[in-house]
Length: 162
Image (cartoon, rainbow, N blue to C red; front, side):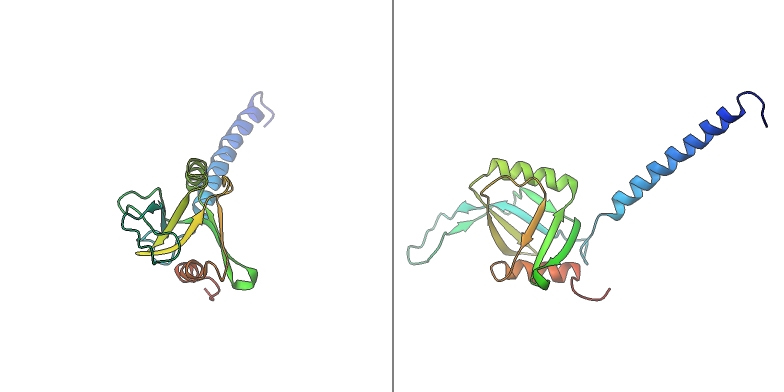
């Protein structure tokens, strides 16, 4: 057992296995960290740039906007984390790392712009970008964002027993 080089071979062998298992753990944990909605065949939501509607109706209050449904800026299929906030009345959604980078770039490009969040064919909310958002955490609060919080609770079965 004390032959020359034996401990070095064992240590190299052990180190290779340690590196393999560490890499395997990192890969598996990154997949485990992704949370998909109940129906993963449809995106959680799409984000679009709000465009001024061509046919403005002066009698209608508020901004009149539309979007090009063929040109989403970001399509979100899953999240890094989704949880209830404000005693169950709000929802915080942490975008995946890739989507966080994309959204950060969008928030810089469209600073002071309006982005629309669409899910399953309905505009859920509009986000006025007032500053760049690098964290990738989108927080929706009731009563202002009631439509999107209800939608996300349903899509991710939040607040229900699993």
